[in-house]
Image 1 (cartoon, one colour):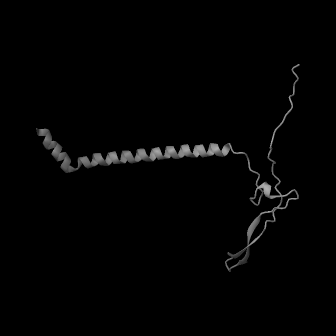
Image 2 (cartoon, helix red, strand yellow):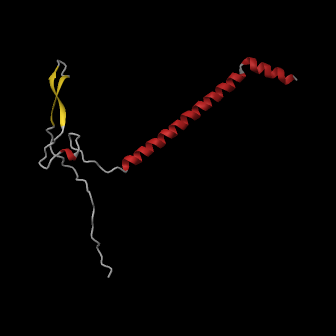
Image 3 (spheres, rainbow, N blue to C red):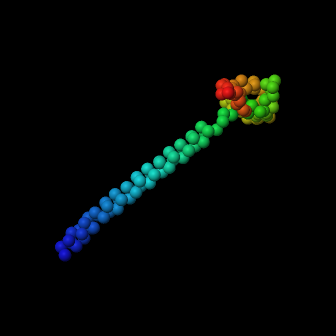
Length: 121
């Protein structure tokens, strides 16, 4: 029966608060680690999705190659600043045709065909 008094003294001193605080800290740390693992898994999934996408031909003006004709003229409209304030911040914009150069990067391959190199007969 003497152990009940020791338990009572332990409770009065605040021993159970320490136990509860330690448990709460452990659960919080566990939650943070689980969330980190989930974020890493999602980042890995997104990276794999990005790696499997085919390259998109984009001009220096950030418009797709389909927006350019064979002569190199871009047929997309862009907003161009027409008025500035004393701090050189644009105040007014106007829509104009993009005046970029034609895309000169690698051309995407629509189909790859190769003849067989050896004749087995």
